[in-house]
Image (cartoon, rainbow over all chains, first blue to last red; front, side, top):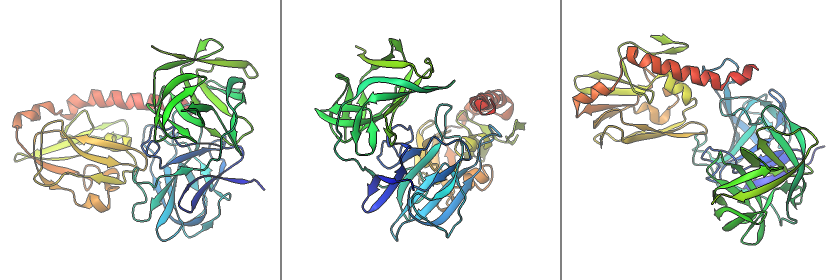
Length: 284
Length: 145
């Protein structure tokens, strides 16, 4: 049986993921994320692959939303509401539920299939978006409860060296050889006022990023100040990222429940197995 | 007129921000076009202005939320709000379901009738909408690769 790992909470409500997943609080442009009230989970699964439920409760509503008519190959969106108690529910989007209203689902059980809707860009991997909502305000974009990432002490520092584990026409994935760790979680570690924290970000295509494990202070990656964090939200300084001395267009790193931290870079300029060393350079 | 899969009634005026406007007796009823609602599938909440509020052309008049995004509506005309679609408070989804009918947004008494000249008839708007639709279809072309 695959172990469930609690990744976020609000009061006694818990959101879980499984080993092998990636998850992110702060690498999305949608407003629930910088408002600390959403987490995205990706499994590496493809379209229509099964997806597990990250929460436990009774399914009380499923809404189907037609896909925009820009492409016949976009899936309709679904919003699934899972009641936790008389006050709170979970909202899950970006999956087609295979269970029905009235069914009880336990965290970890199959709940539906991954779908590709207009909310995914070309480089996004498919995954689900989860919020905790009050029962009288279940569906909209804002108003979710603040999620607390579940993370214990982060040990070890990141060396920005790794190997390409996947390279396709859209992006390359670099598995980082030595990164910070907190129990099951691996991630790109930075220093926030001298304290280890995980970076959760996409740069420069998002205007903000996040740190997990520290709240306020200057954010240093590889001893270069890349921004300042206020209540976990990073306002970036301008910087460039080089991989083997080639400047990359974008860099994304989120929290990993795999054996290594990962960095996604665009464009895809390396072959699988290549060793990659990153350098960060401030732009004055 | 139908442009690709999207309907644009011939008797309405249009803005570049995907609103339709129907003017009668100095009052304008406003709503989202079929193309506009396609950009905002799953509208779940809308904050409408209050009756009696005054706006200038281009002022932010409303914000609305889909299941994941938050956007705003700018006033297509200057004037005073005379009526809002109360049904949207409990059922904002009708904006997507019936954008030219039950999903209308608000009515505004025009203060500057000459502003009508800034709105577009469908013949004038069609090339712009065609270009926007083409761009959106190209954005999803990778799904067929």
